[in-house]
Structures are given as structure tokens and as C-alpha cells.
Amino acid sequence: MRRTIFNEDHEAFRQMIRDFIEAEVAPVYEDWENAGHPPRGFYNKLGELGVFGIQVPEEYGGAGETSFKYQLIVSEECARAGVSFGGYGVHVNLVLPYLLKYGSEDQKKRWLPDFVSGDMMTAIAMTEPGTGSDLAGMQTTARKDGDHYVLNGAKTFITGGVLADRVLVVARTSPPTAENRRAGLSILVVDTGSEGYSVGRKLEKIGLRSSDTAELAFQDVRVPVEDLLGEEGRGFEYLVHNLAEERLGIAASSYASAAAAVQFAKRYVQERNVFGKPVASFQNTKFVLAECATEVEAAQSMVDRAVEALDAGELTPADAAKVKLFCTEVQARVVDKCLQLHGGYGYILEYPIARLYTDARVTRIYGGTSEVLKTIIAKDLGV
Image (cartoon, rainbow, N blue to C red; front, top):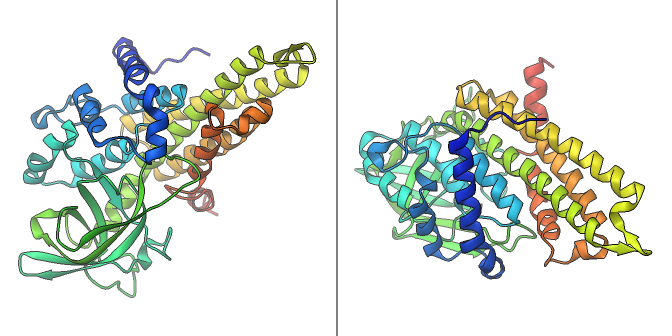
């Protein structure tokens, strides 16, 4: 079916991203995976290309676009090439919405120009050892001491944590109340060069190997009060508000991964001969690809509708939960089937389908597990 959400400007942007990947990423991507992240200077190249600043207002050095469609295009083109931009997704899709909505004018002036150029890379630190999705149970604290907060605690599974220059750290600034376990949480924008801030292990993952993921520790880290994001004690409210866009971002990359898997599999079965004829000529192959293509088109339609809703300010938490749940489950099924069509070669990492397979598993976990999303959807249904 004809897709209608993109215009000529979007397609010109797509071609620019495609050319950039071909010239700057694909030839060295294996090196990034071996290192566990791109070289730091790569993010400055993205800054020069303008992709960090698309949604940043012009007065802070950005393009002033408000649409999520450009981020969708980046997801599609990375998946098409079987590559990743490392910490790009967290920097743009997770952190930027917090800075734009809750940052003060002073904070935006201080941080956004370097955000746009890639001179300041960012991450967000919510998860702690032993807490997982239960943010109300976090133990990291920040107590007021004059014109600073004193931060103590630890975080884990922090994407972009190795190379980040500033990290949005969620910490407890006051105890929870009897009525609300989530009260008392705040967000501090922490300079990673601060004394007492340390990066622990770079975690070895089964997938997303070009994206650095780390443990962080804070020992009496002094954070200026002017680096508090928004108001003290409203951190959980802020997190919930931005979850819809975060989950849409994951859904978009998941759908794009599934779409890429179909293309990789189609190309492979047309070229690979078994019993004297192409694998594509067997009825099973045709049926599997037909099933996958149909699921991908359904996921694409759902993502496109959700992007339009987000751009219009109408994407609800329940709708975002639905699109993430559906697209990540489609991704799991489609990538698995497409790997099967590759036979033994699908298990070899030099084939993009193998990377798509290992990368796919986490999408049903981070940004809200499938089980948590089902709870949100059921609650919205009134059951």
C-alpha cells in the first residue's frame, strides 16, 4: 500500500542519511562492534550532518523541526544497512525531549548548542541493580547541601554511559509518602567529569554491540542546584510524560529491523541454490516471506499512525504501549523466520540477519517490558 507520511524534504533527508551510512559507517562498522561503541569523533560527524539538531529550536543551533518523522527515517536507514549509530538513539529520542520540555532557558542555552554539535553526548540513568521497572524502589539519593546536591548511589544498564558527557540521573531527593511511593524523585543533569562520578564495567551484551552500555557509580558527587531539571520531586511525573515518545522510538526501530530482515532474506534466498534451484523457488520460502511481509506492513501502518499522533500531541501512554508491544513482537517473529531461511549462514555474524537477531531480543525488555505494557493496555481497557 502507498505510504503517505513522507514528503520531498523527508526523502532528501533519507538519501543524505543513506549516503552517509555508506561512506562513514558501513566500511568500519565491524570495528565499532569489536570496540563496543563508535569512536567519539563520530558523534561530531553526526553533529555536522545536522541530525542531532533537527528538533532543537533554531535559537539554540537546531533546525526547529517538530516532527518525529526524521527520527523514523534514521531508524529505517540504519536497519536497511544493518548498522547502528551507537548512542544516537538515547541522545536524541530519550534525552532531548526532557531538555526541551523541562529545561530552563539558562539550561537550554548552556547545553543545547553542544548537544547539537555532538560536543556533549548524553545518557539517562534510571535503572538500578535490583529495581528494574520499579522506579519507586530506587536507592540513589541526592541531598541538598547549600547550593549543591550531594549524589550517592549506583545505576546499571545505562546505554551511552561510557562516552556520555552529561547524564540525566534520577535520584530520590526526599522520602516517599504513604500515599505515593513515587513521590520525592528528581532528575539531575550530572557532569560526568565531576569528582566521585565513575563508570564501572562496560557491560558485554549479546546484541547491540556497537552501543556502549555501562554501570555508573556516584560517591558524594556534588551537583549544582542549577543543574536540577524541572522541579524537585516531580521526576516520576516527567518520566511518565516522556515514556510515550521513548516507546514509539523503540517501536520504530523494531519495525524497521523486521522490514530489513525481510529484504535480507529475500536477497539471500534468490541467490542461494539448494538441490539445483534457488531457495526462493520453494513454496515454503514463498509462504514464509509472504507472512513476514504482511506482518511488517501492519507494523509499519501502526508506526506511521503513532508518529502522526505524536506530532499532533495526541499519542497516549496506552497507544504507545500498544505500538511498542505489537512492533517488538512482530520483530521477534519476523527476524527469527528470516534467519531460518538463511539456514546455517544465518547464525554467522558476517551476515546482517545474525546481528538483527541478537539485537532484537532486548526490545521486548527495555523501555517497558512486554508484560508491563500489557498491564498498561489492560488498565486503559478498564480491566
